[in-house]
Image (cartoon, rainbow, N blue to C red; front, side):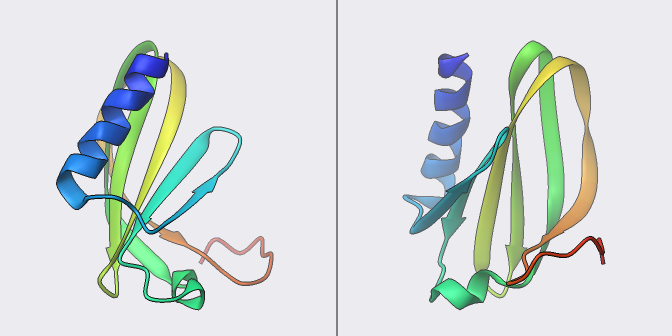
Length: 99
């Protein structure tokens, strides 16, 4: 499992370099690139999610907005092969509204 995570992080670092910010959750780790200041993260980031795993693995998404790149790395168990178009929005206060 750690080899899969290392491979995904290595791919992100080889494409965008070292991140200048990061975050983590129960099943998601985020690498953040070109963040000019902490408050700039409170925005909407769009992109395409591609993931593939059988039994267990990791998927990486590249989301961009305002010249900032956010790369969530998610873990999964089961069978998954596909791509999704979507966005991620960070707010400075908790909300249940997905828009």
